[in-house]
Image (cartoon, rainbow, N blue to C red):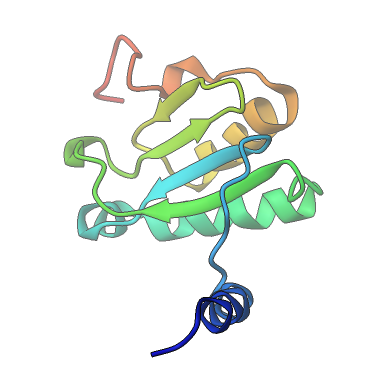
Length: 126
């Protein structure tokens, strides 16, 4: 059995090695659904596009990009959820690389929600 101090040291070491992050409430968090349905619908290039643009636009200090499993809305995949520090959640549906670029530019950089891509949009069959 290891001591508490040894366990804490292992935790700290592993966090750096495997990319475990402590969620920072001051950051905007972007979560891409990467369950089987999301991957099959094209979520991987969406995730890569968002992650790349966040780095290129120097947003890494303000925006955290992560992935999750099933969000539960398979028919609307790929899904991207944006959680802001003030508690707002926006769910973007049927994403592709072009829409992902637009979300980064408008929502993450300018703070403008792209409502036509949200789950609340009037025509979900786009």
